[in-house]
Image (cartoon, rainbow, N blue to C red; front, side):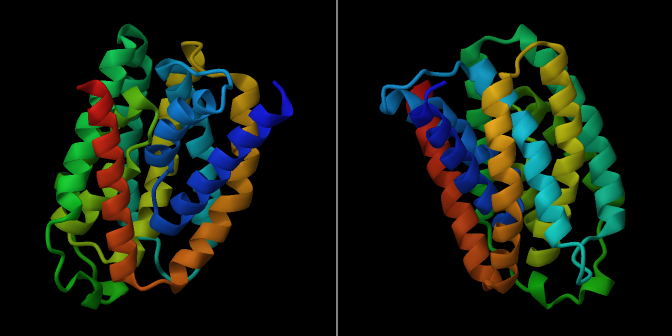
Length: 258
């Protein structure tokens, strides 16, 4: 790897992880297309879809650790929600990550495109009054949360994305969880999800070691910084930024698929 390649991978990891910490996502919804398209744009070595999904899975593991650490105080982490959704998505993501070796690159991109499209539609559903609920009075359907997390886990395990870009809309729209609690708790759930996806990718030989290390270093620096910024930004702005981000990614992926 030359210096230009190292800098490019580091910047992709830094930008994705900063947004990850700020918006409560693992960052793969940004880093997956960036890893796929940016290196070839600068004449650098291109990654395959399998390599990108493997690097993303490992990187998300470390990015979410940094984000959860920054949100550990303030009552934003809903332990019941994390327990039910975390265990379910862990099981689902391991199944998806292990099974992804049987899929073609086109199949992996198609799954990613479908997940991104569903998430984009959900983010534009009106979310009225959820941020008026006191954090200690939040209630939700536990088994619905667990079931949805398991389904998300299978799909996200396939693409190595940890699923937070779909978990966040589910938590906001379906489970009616306040925005900042959604962001903090989704990072913790995504951390659990990334364990299954990472094991699945590593055991099937889909992880490039050196690019993964560069992305990990960038993640541990940028994710806590993003989380600190997220605590200060208005929740409506956070929702709009996430919605536009997911929509843009969905459009880009579908343009390439079609």
